[in-house]
Length: 543
Image (spheres, rainbow, N blue to C red):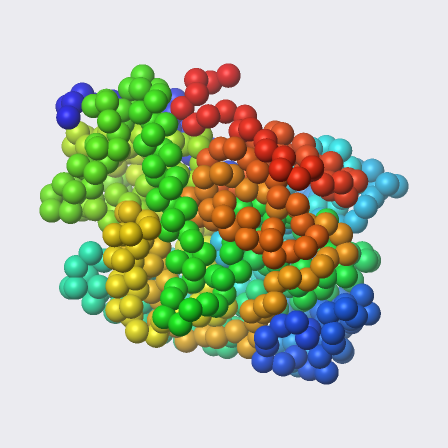
């Protein structure tokens, strides 16, 4: 292996940080299986006649908008804390709106859910609302970010007074996963500490932050905003929310864009399986890693630093194997040096700011080359912009993610099952990625919150308007096969393919964004089988 050290230029770091911030902010009836909301069940065919939220007696809030600066408005809307008791306690949802610039031709409100689960929506809309969609779409829709319950400023799940306490639980914060029995025992202990702290601080809020209540919230907000239909762009986990909306309120579906599709098997499935493995996230990460290594080799060392020895796949295997027994000690600005081994390598490689973002692949390559050559100064420098701590608001995202995932999905109660499944996936269908995705669900083994109601199928409703699914060929979190399956499940849906890599899809293809915009404005879906290119390959020279 070459010992040449390739240092990132100072110009690279701001661009990586900008991309990181963009994804962090652009990354939250009778047909349901529920604990039984108040009132008799209503057949899905009568959804158009359902009361707001699908439950009789739900009060529709009056929304009083306040100026939020730069043309934005904000408000708080009260929805039922528990839809089984619609006249009881309320929960305030934080909203930010960018009003349509052509109100005379306004179509309606367009909600955006940025996934996670756990991502806020209100502040993301405020930060980048005008950059999300073309002006012609923003002319016709009020763009609305509503923080889902338990996130952002909508009764957020917070487990510690000091966020620094959360970072001490490295096995529950996507910094590390266990690779030995002793580490697994510590991971289980950390999961219990997190679960205890979260229940103590949040109480029964943990039982009321699921996806079905969030879907009901959107329908209540729809009514409060004076719209007949729910218009929604859902990214990543937001596509699961969109599927719940489509199947609980099919006659109320307006424009529904699902970008980077989560398999509904995430919610429940084979006994003893975990949510994120059922969602095929491990296979997606393994596939996208191979794409990264293949394209790196094709680009060569001038454009991909990790191609220095001519064979990135072999180099990655050698590096991963070495770090199992010989971790690096990495200096970090303002923090004590940390060990960087096998698990840390994979957490960074598969993280929100690396494989998810094709624009950051050159930085990931420089990072891997620095690790391979032992250049710990560069490793520490790049960890500051590529590691979990680089994601703005990550503490809030993480605790809300755990709360919603564990409340809404079926997972094993045996903490040791996660490692067993992960190692099996590592050996078979998802090299390097199996354990990482399996252990992400470990807190659910001991979690002390369970949704009072959730939708677990069916997933085959015919919606009033067509649903547009968008997916990249190689997605590290929600692989392309998920979109194919959901397309098969939803009779009135169209699948738009982006021939490229990364997560989500619309960020990287102006062709896909143009066709999506046409759909939002006219309802016209692309022709069956339409494939859009990405605007730029990960290792292409700047245009």
